[in-house]
Image (cartoon, rainbow, N blue to C red; front, side, top):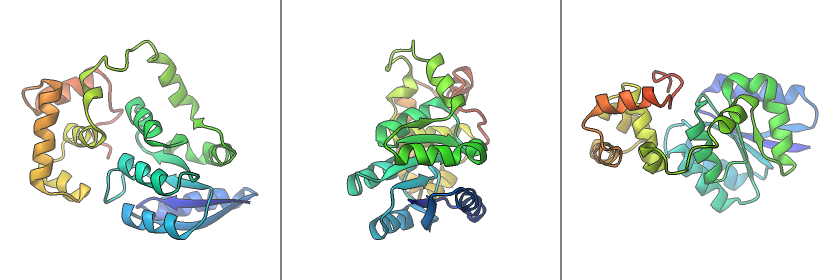
Length: 215
């Protein structure tokens, strides 16, 4: 029996994931969490083989959360389940310690196979994401300015491009407005952009985000 933990801030999403796993044989949903703090508490209190983790929950940045989880529970396998289908998010998630990356739109068809594979020690990437990796293998790791951004800066960059204000970003990431303003300044400096419009044009030109309005 594979014990699975679910971490997503949307109750309906967790219910859907639980239903998919319970319909399949050999899986037990051992616990659920709705934000980064409760996720840490859950992994500390509950033994499981796999954590299905949403990258965009309230609290800590999802990529930072992966690192903390792997520091505390190295054996726990993490399947990122997210709405972000962009290659940059997948690359950063794997570097942080994830064992699988699956978009929510593919969950109904691929969740069971993904959980089973990473529980057995494998790595899982959906077919669509694998194709994106293959298409970009020719690019050097340091080819583009956005790849110089830290994980937190990349998250702020995405939200700026999506049209969120500094205040909105600060609230959703549970940090101060001053902190987000500092991140914005560093993003503009690292990417050598004069303003937010430059960031938006850059994101569109390089097709970084499938839908800048999706958070």
